[in-house]
Image (cartoon, rainbow, N blue to C red):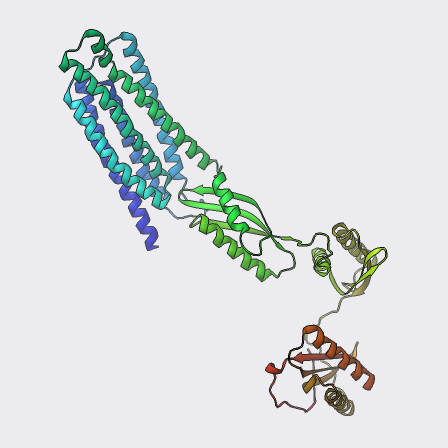
Length: 494
């Protein structure tokens, strides 16, 4: 908040300094222009009068633009500066027309009613010095805080320096023609220099006004900058994990930039990883456009469109897109090409015809991305999870027998030790279920540890055929204590 307050204060002070300078220059130029009847000086006086009005508008625009966003203006009030800049250009166009009209009248008349005077020379020199000072001040603050209104003022007053120099040459030429008593043809040319200078001033003002109006209209119309869009797209494309970048839109409201874009990420990543990548994208954008308000839309995209490199990811992605859960995925390679066999879970109460239609749509989507694959699906009811259902206790004799067999089998298996955490219970629809923990040998891979677990499970089923479900939790050596409980315990599940 302190930094924002300092920024607004500095912008406001720069605008006030410009307003004070415009007041002084307008007054001095107007008095000298009326006294000398110099069209060049009068055009500069009117120009400075517009500067005064523009500076006042800038002060007001800066005050309005500094207001925070509210419910009526969720993007803030920054475009007040663009409206101010556009209004300034309309005023400048008006003064250009007046100067051109008056200059044409004097040129057609063939004479200039200018009263030669060093006052005109002095006031234009003074104007140049003041304009140089305020252009430096405005440009420094405008670039520091990206203020379009102050930037318009700086551009405006930088043209004042050039136009004042042109008028200075014209007024000086008229004064020299009078002082040096030059021959008539040359004197008439120098006398008209003031009028020609006024036309040049009008041309300079018109060119600067046109450019400033175009920038203001572009900002108000949210046209954005192609250079900024390209810079944002390039920066985001360099973020690790971002597969594609699209829909980049950049708009500005005062000093605040707003960026919308879409990024493609691997469809198999978790939501939390997608969220992390979105944060990295925002950081990359703010490196290009500091302080930008960034909205990132994350879209899934497959790294392997054909499915041959990562078929499991492709299958899971297609199933997830259709709200289905699949398991027991088997990939076979036959003479006719790849073959996929899988189980699809659906609500048990759902009509079979509707369930079949859901799976058919899933298979069509999978074939569209993997045309060479033959798909064979098996429909089954999904496992219903219940809350508060208690398992019945297992008879003590059976409990002790199962635990003894586990210890015997673990002792025979060289890669298994320390069986512990044994529990057993009976579920109405499944039968007797047992679960236990054991430690496996160090340095095994997941595949090797799973093979040990399956081997132990098969041996336990042969030893205790009544077991309906066996769950073995494998642990590495570093995660289990050396001394563990060896007492079996019944467990009620909920």
